[in-house]
Structure formats: structure tokens, C-alpha cells
Length: 87
Image (cartoon, rainbow, N blue to C red; front, side, top):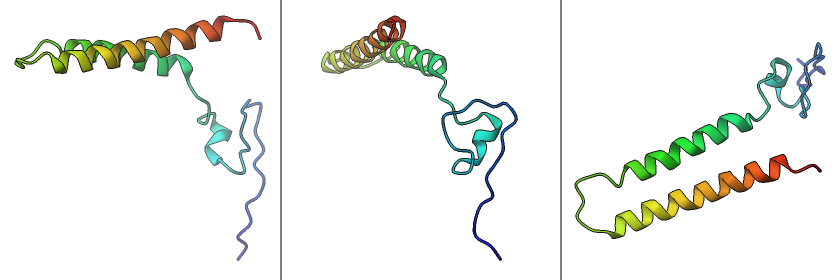
């Protein structure tokens, strides 16, 4: 019984990882979807800001919610700006 993996041969799938190390790369499942991450990030920003509306009476919670939302929004804007610059 052999424990060695046979090298996988992809049929035109462009990937940055070796399919022998990551078998799902042959199906194209190993890439990062930057657009999906950005959409999810903006969803989290909106969700954090929506949590301000609630039954809490203190303002400390609001400061943390707005702070984390602003930090995440800053990261997302920086990522978008850096992605548009030519390399």
C-alpha cells in the first residue's frame, strides 16, 4: 500500500497552489474571492452600526461599535485603494 500521492493534472485550471498539496485546487476552490470578502466586510460594518439601535442605556457600547465599524471600514477602503493602484 503506497502512501505517496500521485501528481494531479489540471485541465486548464489556473491556480497558485499545487493540486498535489490541495486536492480541491483542481476544481478551482482554492482561490480567494476578494470581492466576496469585501462584500462580507461591508455587511459587518452595517451590522455593527445597526447594533447601536437597541435597548442599552450606556454610550460605551456605542463607542466600541462605531470604533470597530470605522476601523473595518478604513481597512476596506485602504484595500480598495491599494487594489486599484498599478504595480
